[in-house]
Length: 296
Image (cartoon, rainbow, N blue to C red; front, side, top):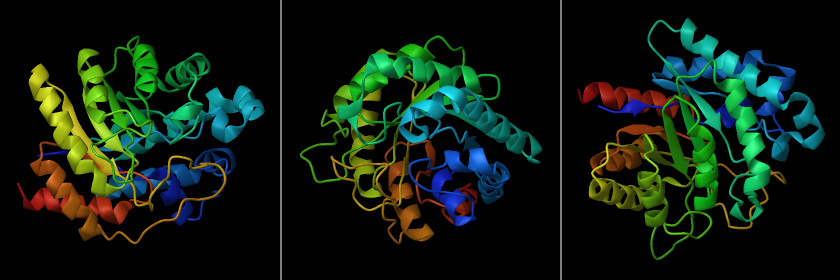
């Protein structure tokens, strides 16, 4: 049996008609129409997920801009956490809330990461969400230095912490983070830090399986009890020089049954946490929930 995460909040907000554009991304709905955020969470809950993730991914200067972040960053992240908590508590079944720790300096761009600048942003996100969440999910980690910076901040929290690494989508000699660093080195660092979970996210589903295999091997070598999983995106290939705020990434036509075929392979490889990232919608999650029910 596996834990089922939700799908991508940003594109679900866009799909249901919430205000949505670059550079604000999913924060625009928090600012202009927060009821849409509740609705998006509800859609994923109705689809059968066990976990919803706080819509705080864009509550960083990279998306908000420095001035708005200084004025509203904490409040927007707190509002996002409040909405997620309410949506989970309103459900007739148990739904947990994952506090989202996004890339502080921008997605897919390890070259922009600065640990000294990122640390206070991460602390703000933690402080804003801490009273409303059940565990932490650090997302789209693109470099080992980025992992270490987030891990250092989350080590001060009593809540479990899970870390999701983003992979190079292009063909490489071995699974690599977007920084080019080998996945095996990132997993070794995570195991040595005593993390609660290791996942891979916001990369194409085709590259997940090899990374899961590497991670499972390292986890077993360490004899660690660490949850393992993946939640891919439905985007076309994201290149190393992607400018995340310039335009919206193209969505590919990935049906629910096609996505489920990838997921089955991840489960067979040892994963126990599955979900979706950008452009993976409630219908994809509902299909995975149905798959889970029929396999009991």
